[in-house]
Every structure is written in C-alpha cells, then in structure tokens.
Image (cartoon, rainbow, N blue to C red):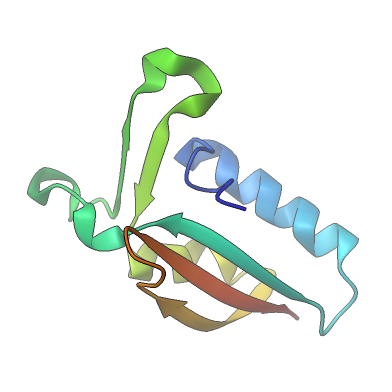
Length: 96
C-alpha cells in the first residue's frame, strides 16, 4: 500500500512492466498514489514532480492523472483514477 507514492518517476515504468509480467491477462492492480492535485504549478506541464530525493527511497512522487494513464497503458487498461482516500489518490487497472 502506498508504494508508488515513493517510487521515483523514472523507475515506475519498470515496476509497471514487472506487474504486467506477474499478472495474467485480466488481472487487476489497485495502486495508491499521492493526490495529483498537489502537483506544484511549475510541474503541471511535465505531469510529475518529486521531492525529498535526499531521503533515498522515501522520496515523494506526484504524478498527474493524465501521466498515470500514459505510463500504465502500455501494459494495462486504466479503469479508474480517483482522488480517494483523503491526501491520496488511486489507480485501478486491468492487465491487457
């Protein structure tokens, strides 16, 4: 729970590919993420932002809903991206 909130943005596609390798077609993943509405204005065009990188693997990664769809879609169908629970968001995806 709440792992993708701390995985560096550049490492996320590799983890997503690993989920795709492990799940059979039709399998589901529910991943929690930081609330994408907390992206700083300066990072909105890029669609992602990291802070706390000096803390190693406990950095905080924020990804916009559009960017989430972009990085998950090569392997998964994105079924839902929602701001819930409070301060977090989640993505529900199904393996292609």
